[in-house]
Image (cartoon, rainbow, N blue to C red; front, side, top):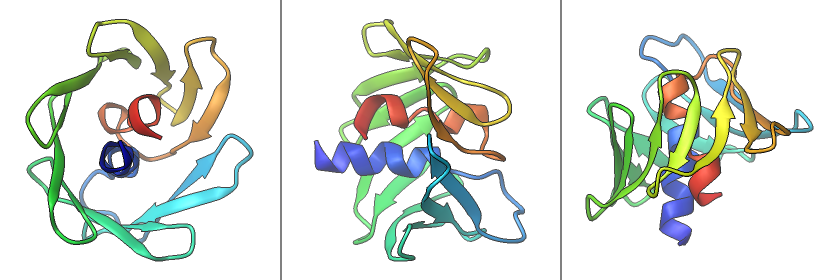
Amino acid sequence: MKRLSLLLTLLLTLLAGGAARAQRIQDAGFRTVGYIKDDGTVQDAGFRTVGYIKDNGTIQDAGFRTIGYIKGGTVQDSGFRTVGYIKDNGTVQDSGFRTVGYVKKDGTIQDAAFRTIGHAPGIPLSHAAWWFFFR
């Protein structure tokens, strides 16, 4: 489960290409929980490297082991098992198609009851859904 948590932690921090600086990721109280650098390196709040995001959607841990993938709106673990879906409208579903939350266009992350649980401004909608699966 720890590897899966890291997988979706990395997915939340996935940033669209071409960023000029590290993108900050925050929890519901606007406390910084991590960063992603423009080269795909993901760091925790203490600037320790926790993983890497490849341009092809492959997610790696700090030891460069592949721990998952994101392909279109589908999130998979390292064994290519589907663990969730991200719909174009921001709805996040688990592998059984049950709604577990929402990602708004402004980067606000909400649980199924619409309570704000995180903030990821500038992060693509399709990559912010890790919060619902493995945190």
